[in-house]
Every structure is written in C-alpha cells, then in structure tokens.
Image 1 (cartoon, rainbow, N blue to C red):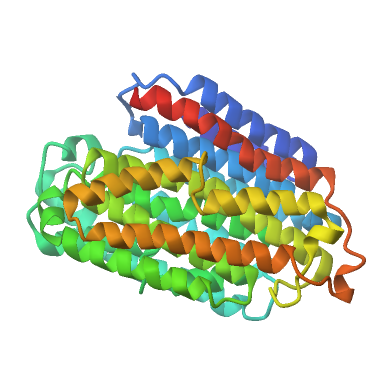
Image 2: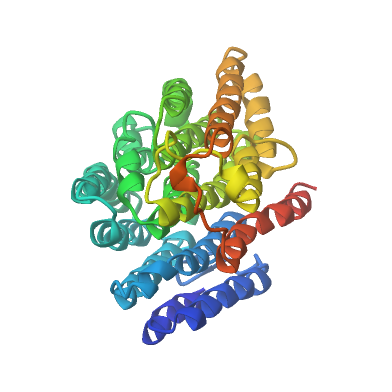
Length: 439
C-alpha cells in the first residue's frame, strides 16, 4: 500500500511529461488490481485492506489517470500544467491514504487534506469569475461539518484508548450526540439534500478534471466513512435510521425534480449525483447486507458513470463554449459517434440493464421492502425520475434542429474516445467481480 503512495509522490519529478505521467498512473492502477487481490494482509502499521478499499483505491487511480488525459487543453494552452499535475498527484496520494488507513484520526487528516487540491483546482482553473464563490462554498461547507468529526474522534480516543476501525468493531456507542458528530461530515460530503448547496456550484465552476475527480471519487469518501464507522454507531443508527432514510429519499426525489428543470448540462449531472447519493445513504441506513452492498455498487458505478458524463460535457464545452441545453441541439447530425457515447452513459446513469447501477438499485429495493413497505414507493420514484431526467438530457442535446453554431462542430479525437471507452470498460468487468464476491 505504501509503495503506491510513494509512487504518487515520486512522479512529481515527471510533471511536464504528460504522456509518461498518464502511463505511470494507469500502470499503477493495473498493478493495484493484480497485486492487491490478497486480502489476508490484516492490519500492518495502520494499513487496512478489504474489498471496499480495493475497489475505491483502484477507482481513484483509474479516474486520476483519465482526468489527466482529459486535461490536455491545459497543457496545450500552457496554463500552469505542472502545478495542475502536482495537485492531481497530491489528491491521489491523499485518497489512497484515506481509503487504506485503519486509523480513524489518520483517515480524518487525509479526508481533510483532499480539500486543498480540489479547492485550488476550482479556484485556479475554473471557467467563470463565480469560481471564487464556488471554491469557498466547497471549503467552508466541508470544514464546518468536519469539526464535530474531529471532536468525536478525540472523544473516542479518550474513552476507548484507540481510534482503530478494527478495534472499534467490538465496541458500540449509545451516545446520540457522538452519533451526529461522527456522521455530519460524511453527510455533507456525500452530499445529503440540504447539505448539498456546495456541490452544483463547485461542479459548474470546476474544470473538466475537477468535476471528474469530484464526482468520481471525492463524493465516495462520505459513503466510505459512513460504512467504516457503521459497526460503532449501530445502536444509534437503529434509532435514527427512519430520519436518515426519510431525508435521503425526499431529498433524492426533490433533487431529481430539480434536474428536470435545469438548462445547464453540467448542473443537471451535478444534481443527478445528489439523487444517486440519496440511494447510497438509504442503503447504508437500512443496515443490512444487501443495503450496504447495493450502496457500495452504486458508489463505484456512479463514480465511473458521472465522471464519463462530465467528460462528455467538457468535450462539448471545448468546442462551442457553452453548456446550455437550449443551445446544444442536434449533435446526432454533426457528431454521431459522440451521440453513441451520450446514449451509453445516459442509460448507465438511469440504471438500465445490464449496468451495475441496476444491481445496486435492486439490492436497495429488496432492503427497503424488508425495512418498511412504504419506502419502496420512494426508491421506485427515484429510479423512475432517474430515467426521466437522463432521457431529457439525451433527447434535448442529441435531437432537434441543428443551430448555426453547431454546423462547424468537429468530431471527437482519438484521445477523447479512449477516455470515454476507459470509463465504460470497467463496467464490463464489474459483473464478473460481483459474481465472484457474492457467489
């Protein structure tokens, strides 16, 4: 595990070598998949390795390689590409530490450290002057919610004399104040509805790479943290699960309805992330094997899918300098191959078969039946609305009369096709891996 972290730091000397940097990161991802399949490591100096760490660590390496590949325009325009690459590798280092440590305090430090690179990315390479406001929203929302988490960790350390995940498995807290202190930071990071206002702003103002890493991995830190502390707060979760499920389901439905009224493609995809993370929170709150499994599958599948959608929006923005659904019309007539990618990612986002999102939603659907029959209505409503806003996005942008601004729309390059194919490719392997795990 440490060798991957050290590799991230060592490639800082190759920041100006764009092609070599991408190759090293993607090679690290393949090595992660091959070498880290041995889950008998146990605990070695605060290193924790299981299926959840394996998937999210691999996803971090994969998405980071693709986001650097997608940021060729920063290198082409010589817009401080070395600094941008250094921030990307810093982010990757902190993500690997946060997903692989078994110490709660170390996790908190890495969890907070990921804010620095994404804050500087949005502030430095964002598109509009509003990026300053968006980056402050991102910083202060997360920092404010994270302070109670730090106090909670220190309280655990003073009472249980340990902050190790594995030792906390045998302990249970019945302190409701500690429960809210521990989960508040993760709820804002997910984000749950009402704690989500930073997300659309940050996504809309961030560069393509910033949106990819934010939606692909950083949101998953919230779900990962909740799953890790779940055994410790089990008693209190049983008491407050109805509140958490209610807030997540209602919030998911409202976020889906907001999606249907968006005129900005990027904003629509950002709000769709809120709706998907509502399902993740509900699955974790059900506290059953299928519920948590469904949440993990949706987290990983959504990381690939939303990152691909943000890449597609970035491809269009590079060509016609707008993200407005009103102005993007008839792409199918000028770039039919791009329409194929839009179709594949839209059906993946709406959990159509045979995508892994469908498996995750079915798992959560079964868990909700077991938890409370009425909650099935909201889970079904979320699935229906996901289909509605993804069809709205696809039909509005790909069909209709082509505007004059779209007449000279160039076809996608090989690099862009490769990035999008690399987002779809892991989907094909997820079924094989899930069959291996759940068999």
